[in-house]
Amino acid sequence: MPADAASAKPILELRGVSKYYGDLVALRHVELRVEPGDAVLLYGPNGAGKTTLLRTMAALSRPTEGEVLFNGEDIHRNAGLSKARVGFVSHTTFLYGELTGRENLRFAGTLFGLRDLERKIDRALDLFAVRERASEPVRGLSRGLQQRVSLARAFLHDPDFLLLDEPFTGLDAAAVESLETILRRLPSERKAIIFSNHDFEQGVALSRRLVALERGRLRYDGPLSLAPLESLGIAPAGKSQA
Amino acid sequence: MRSLSVIWAIFVKDLRVEWRNRETLAPMCVFGLLVVFLFNFAFETAHEETLRLLPGLLWIAFAFSGILAFNRSFAAERENACLEGMLLAPIDPSAIFVGKLLANLVFLGVTEAVIVFAAAVWYNFSFLPSLGDFALILFFGTLGYAALGTIFGGVAANTRMREVMLPVLQFPVAFWVLILGMDATSDALRGAARGDIARGVLRVAGVSLIYAVVSFLLFEYVLEE
Image 1 (cartoon, one colour):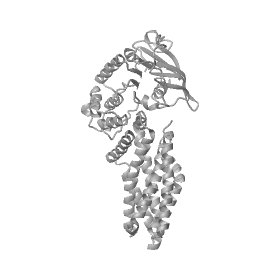
Image 2 (spheres, chains in turn green, blue; image 1 turned 30 degrees about the horizontal axis):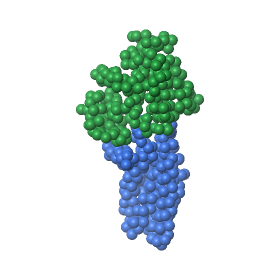
Image 3 (cartoon, helix red, strand yellow; image 1 turned 90 degrees about the vertical axis):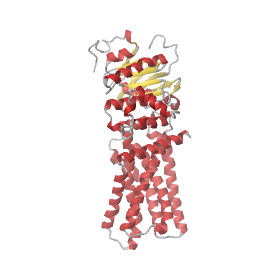
Image 4 (cartoon, chains in turn yellow, orange; image 1 turned 45 degrees about the vertical axis):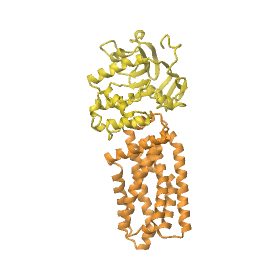
């Protein structure tokens, strides 16, 4: 946890969160505080529990033990308020293949109860340079373009807290650069980001804090500059883990 | 008001997806027609026997066709984890139930119309004298059956053998609405006394409303992991 974290009011807090799937332990007693403006890289090998942790923070999954607080309130007890302020990008796109990108965003915007929806859709599509292809059915788009529409969907309601699970998957160089620019800007707008990324170097360039998981346990939570990379099993520059 | 707009959005989305991929209605109608067609060959019936067999035949055709709709209803949501996409939004989970129930009602309604028309032609039977009562029985029976199908479709979607699991869950519980539907349809088609027909309609409506309300209340738990 960062040194000044104890004094700041967290936007999200995990208290003793464990998650079991039968005998499988996906998360084990995870404690985490995220404040507005935080940019957190979630790192760990496959099966470390990154996706489970992100899903738990997005209120998609209930912890078996412990609690998740959003602005001090249980995230499941007051799910509507927290969901309205959280944007989530997953391995899957949450997009209907038969609908166009614009229709998908219009549907999502209606569920979020957004006003002035068409303008917000245009803004989100422009943000990820996918407006020109927004009238095509998603099924016909490449994986990269689908990922851009998925990102536009997550940003549509201008969330304060972004949970991004491998957000660079499938993106071409231009889209990667565009997303990197956006992610660098968000902390200055007091928006919090937690993202997982298999490219450690890229993650380091976009975050100030590292949360390392291994077999569901929190191995490290603190400034990137102080992270004991070797003991965490993270390869030095140029040899990032795949 | 917001819940209504969410329900409408989900309903319209389901219809639009179906309009573009035609993966639900066409198989439902073909399947229903096949049931009617095969029964026609299996029982070469005189008019009186037709009257005895027709209610059961119709409800069996509706029931089996409906299973296809309920399976498809959540198949589209499973792809790309779209159901989770909906759950990320600040909406009441029961709005998802109502939106999907309405879409399933439309699919079943269209299929039933096709099946009834085919039965009328193949069995040379006129539904017109009892059309009002028959339509009421169909409406309520379909409501109850679709409500169960919507919730069990959601349950089965989270299981590995979902295509098998749905009918295994659905038919034992839907037993009452099917039996009462057949009974009431039989009364309506053979022109029973008004009181008997009214009692039949009320029984179907009562059971269906119970199924619909219970499904509505429990749907939230189905969406939990």
